Length: 267
Ligand code: FE2
Image 1 (cartoon, rainbow, N blue to C red):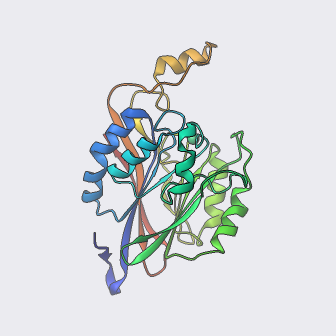
Image 2: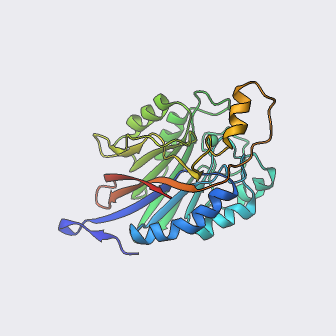
């Protein structure tokens, strides 16, 4: 797809970020809805968070489905190692990212630079430390370190985190240094999409891709039972109609920064 020309010959690129795909229902909905949305919105590059494709974690064949559905890069989070079959693919597939601030011995990578027409796009996956019981390095200083290594035209950050404060803080910390920062993991979209003062596009959480009537993708009865003190059960994915939630960042190829953010919710 060709990038749209703005006044003065500046090219605008449209980057789509899609919220956590949950279970087979989420995968099926993504397969049906992603390519039509990409055509409709003239999307040049798509990042999909896939860490819940198998509920907790994802299998190699589900990574294939995400790419076939239209993802250019798949990001992950706290459930990266939920299915051990994925470990070899993390080392071998440069388009599959796990959080960059996982400690040193984790397989895979958390940063990649990719071609997008006439420009290059860097994608960084980070995980938060508030409320997530994970032995991760500091995401703020990890981002600093990565940003010193390469300077693609656009830089995108998927921050997989629980706390809205940590997500906002990293957004402002990286403002003007990256093109876009979006949050994943909490599965509920936030209404704070916009462009920060120094030009970074931001949203605290994209939402999710999966069943509408569910608790973060899980059947409502199963979740309620757990809150009533019932025993832990293997997480299932709810049935019924689905949604695909995310955001489109319009990026200026001259500055590398964001000029507009639009939330999407495709039923
Ligand atoms: Fe998560």
